Amino acid sequence: MDKVHQKKWVRVAFLIAGSILVGLGVVGIFLPILPTTPFLLLAAACYARSSERFYQWLLNHRWFETYLRPYREGKGIPMKAKVLSITLIWTMILFSILLIIHPLVVRILLILIAAGVTLYLLSLPNFRKSTPTANGIETQGEGKSKGVLKGG
Image (cartoon, rainbow, N blue to C red; front, side, top):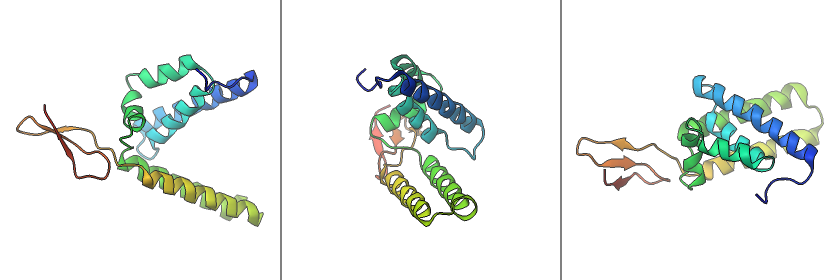
């Protein structure tokens, strides 16, 4: 894979970060306050730069592929993941700005980063899982449309 970084210490750092992010994603599956999808997306990005084996494992894992596939197919991420992610980002940024970070330049930079991530998340389509109906036709919410009919 051409995305894997050449330097070994960088690959190890990405592998460790990816593993931590997978752990947070797993916790998010069981703990509703943590958004699972963004952690797994970040883990996939880390693994893509560190290990083809771990990257493929994550993408094809039976628990994680349902969180990663819609994003990879351009269908977006669930609204719940967006709301939780944006809430968590702004909570942590505001906490850092108000209580930890003192230089004004760093505070401004953190706000700009949070705003950029927020805009990116809001620009993604809202993914809704397919839901069967009484007549056997599944409706699947894709993007910002009301729904797409698919034969069942």
